[in-house]
Image 1: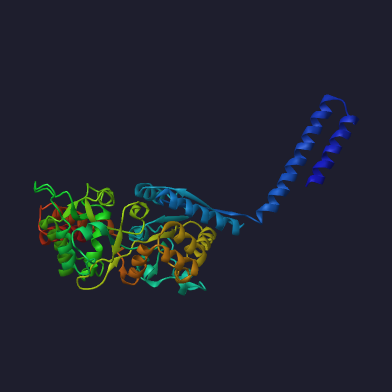
Image 2: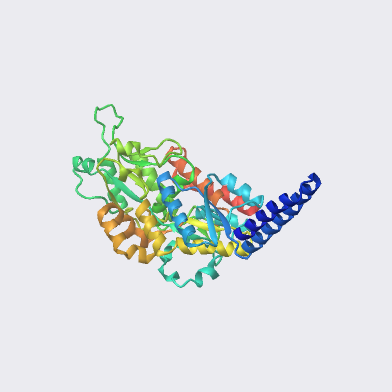
Length: 439
C-alpha cells in the first residue's frame, strides 16, 4: 500500500511538471481522487474477510472496586481474542433494560439478576444456553447448585458470574460482654441470644443495643434476607408454577421474625435500607444478616460470623450474579457465548473471587492453591464457602416481580405489627391468586 501511494505521488509530481494549465491540473485532481478511492476500497475489502465482532455488555456491578476487577478481566479476554471485542458499559436500572429489550435495542450480553429470567423468556429476549453448555469440555467444573437458579422449563437461560449466600455477622466483644460463649445453631438459640444482647443501659425502656437488625421495606432485599429462614423451615413460595404463601414453612419463618420484634430484641432498618451496616459498626446492633460483599469485613470493628441457624434443615439462599445472551444475530450470539465460556473458566473465576470476595462457581478455582491460601487468610469467608452445598435459589418464574412485591408487603406488614404473619401471608396469597387467574 505504501509503495503504491509513493508511486502515485511520483506520478503527480511528474504530471505537474508536464502540464501547467489550470484545467489539466483539475483533471489531474479528479484522476488522483479516483485512484485513492480505489486504494481504500482495496483496503476495505482486505479487512472485510477478517472482521472483528464488537459486542456490548451491560452490567451494574457495584461497588466500583468490583467493577474495576470485572473491567480488567474483560480487557484480558479482548487481548486474547482479536476477532471478538467486548465493551463493558455500566447500565443501572430495570426500566432502562426493559425499554431496550422492547425497543429491539438490547445489548449482546447482560449482567443483571436471575429473577428477571421468566420475564425475559416471555418477551423472547434471551437465548437458551443448555446446548452450548452441554458441549463445553469443562462443564463438570461448574458447581451444580449455582445453575439451579438459572433454569426454567428445562432450559438453562444464563450462566453464573459468581455465587454467594447469606450468613449472620456478629460482634464478638458484645457476645462476650453478654456472657454468650458460642454462636447460636438453632432458631431457639438465636432468639435467646438476641434477647441477651438487647440492653437498656439507662433504664428508659429504650434499648441502646439490640440483638439483631431486620430489614424494613417491601423490596427485594427484605425478601432475599428472609428467604434463608423460609428454606430452613422447609417452606416454599411457589408450587408447580403457582404462588403458595400459606404453607406451614412460610408461616413459621415469618412468625419467627414476628417473634423477634415482639421480644423487643430486633430493631428495624430504615425503610428499604436493610443492607446498611451503620448500626452494626457502631455497636448498636450485635448481629446482622448479610453476605460476603459486606463492608463489615473492610472495617476496623471486631467481627465474626455464623451460618444461618437451623429450624427443620440447614439452608441459606443463593445470591448469584449472572450473564444473559440477548437475542441478536447468530454470529453475535456465538461470539457472546465465547465470552461466557471465559467467565466460567478457572482463570476468570479465581481472579474474580480474589478481587471481589465473591465465591467462585468453578470447582477447580475453589480447589486451587491460590484460592485456598486466600480462604485461609480470611476465615470469615469459609462460612459462606461451607454453606454453598445447602444454598438454594429463589424462583425465576415470569411473575416473580409480582410475587416478590406481595411477599415483601406481607413481611413489612408483619414487622410493623399491622398484621400477624399468618394473616399477612393469607392476604398476599389472595392478591396473587387474582393476578394469576387474570393472566
